[in-house]
Length: 180
Image (cartoon, rainbow, N blue to C red; front, side):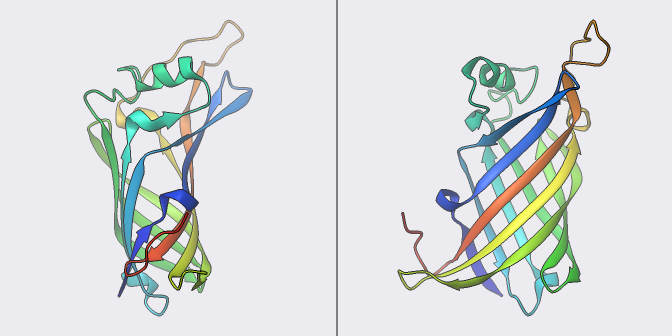
């Protein structure tokens, strides 16, 4: 099984959530790391581990980011990190997998399934080996104790419960160094 490091320079951890029922707010995390054990010939044996620094949340609005860091949401002082550890991989077809794992967020651990597309692998200009993946999933923020909301005069609530997760991952074989 080949070991890979997730290249945070060429990857992203993104999310989106409904705002006022009518639109979606998108955000990402700027500080995170991860490792992957993956062999194209045995994808069902893959293992993934990711750690995200919750204080690195960014929605391109400092006021909203400050609120997200507060006890109403991520409570970054008390829970500075969220983690995801895979527990099983189901092969859907050659380039598609369902990764089951445990997400620990806001002091709560719950199962989360990611739908993963494998984009392939190849050599980079520096002699390293890289592989690409796209993963999507969905969580209910209330399952993790993030219950803040505000009722709207027009009906509905300020912040949706369902949070869509979208990961774009470029992994570098552990023997290779990530390039700029």
